[in-house]
Length: 475
Image 1 (cartoon, rainbow, N blue to C red):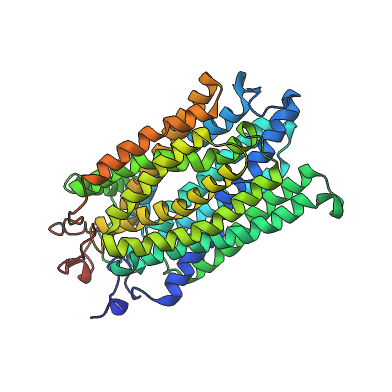
Image 2: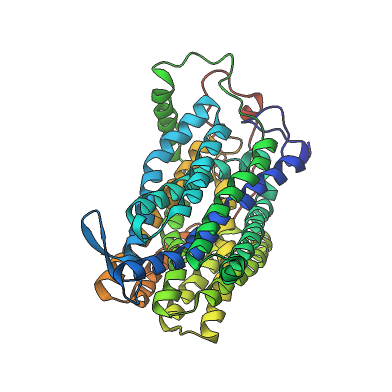
């Protein structure tokens, strides 16, 4: 049987590598990637810094502001808000994904988190100095919506694609995200740069950008919602749930946790991902604040740099996907992590000017690569055709979110104590060193333990789930 006709064990009635389904899947990257670009990386951090300056009547976005009765540096407050967001989703994600697997309602959960995130982005339209506290909570909700939807989205990859296409399809998804987000950022950049020409002030231009982000996200998400396989629901011959879906969601989570204990390579990869991702995600979340508050770059030049960075990231995702075909996934990831170590060292010394733009180009090249390869590598390690893909990816997602919590909190604390983001950036190199050490333990090994079969859902397992596994080697 050819790969294009291999049925999915988790969702009967469709074939893997169906072009309509895989293309539709990549459009969720197109839809939701406007959040990390517009909200996380560019316009929102710049606007946040300007709001802090208005509140404190200073020229520094790091000046302390009052938040829930506490005085917190403005830039650190944003870091802490990010940390809280990902801590929340890390707590609820495993339970929700197990519930989605048990109930057969994965697409429904994807839609719920999508709309929470998109509506919250649109709600930032009302962000002003007078609404700092409320807007901080809205930002948290937007981040929860984004990160919550990603785990369900990622879990479709091993279901809709054959393993030999994981790397290329994952790279295509990230590339679609970069292209879509660049288009919206250009629109937002025009609005922000020429706001006076259309009769609005700079504050309103930024607020319109947040509104457009929410509309873009919810609007284009309709494409994957229409093309991804429908929710299978509970099998008709499955036994009745005892104690309701909530308790059975915990039961499914327990089964996946028990199987993870028998998959040492999965645990090693998650440990490696946990450590190096602390550095990657933290750099991505604080890069704009670093440019505005540490290097004092103009907002227009900074946004243009971020725009070009996304274009370079497209090439990086495909380049490292090809590299992984030649030398293996973990070797390609190891090279990417090593480059990130050099980025941290260079970031400590970087100044406004050519060195900053050169560093941004290198970040763009490795940014898409390490994210895309991490997702596809994990897809190759988990049990093939498991019907519990959402639950398995929840552990991947929790690993990511907890790493962001620790990474951004560490960055904020060091910045608050030392008064310099350069010290925080240099400290991140420790995370990359640990990640590289753990990755090197997987090099040369066959990553998937084929002796373990997928965990069945309640009731008779799908026929294809009992098929003998013969996964290609991923090094």
